[in-house]
Image (cartoon, rainbow, N blue to C red):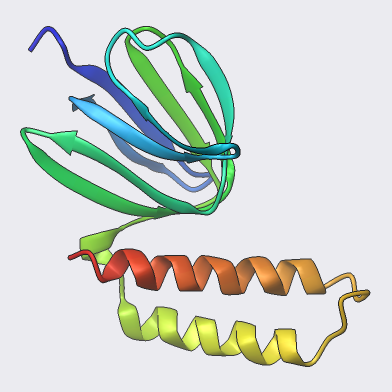
Amino acid sequence: MADELMVEIVTPEKMVFSGKIEEVTIPGGDGEFGVLIGHAPLLSTVDIGVLNYTKNGKKIYYAVGAGYAEVTLDKVTVLIESAERADMIDKEKVKELKELAEQKLSGISKGNPDYETAKAALENAENTLKVAERV
């Protein structure tokens, strides 16, 4: 199809997705934004949130961590800390991670260097559970 956009979703561990899609929506640092073929080039931060794309008329959802997105006229590259497809999320494991993050966060003060790490872990777990519910 001529009006398809190439998308690559990459984490430090692997290429999560690479393929042609109709559109993608990314949780940008300044808010969610959508990209279609021919979009103006841009570079954006990516926040913890929900990334989704439409392929063959079907939306596919991912829980994503922070990172960066580069948009060109016909390609989007998303470089992020983590990405889990909604239908592949182990809800029980994520619930355990959420509980651990809550326990750790409750035991440290905001001045502690580990506070931001624990807070990000909790945000990631909450986001992942939210995305898992979309299946």
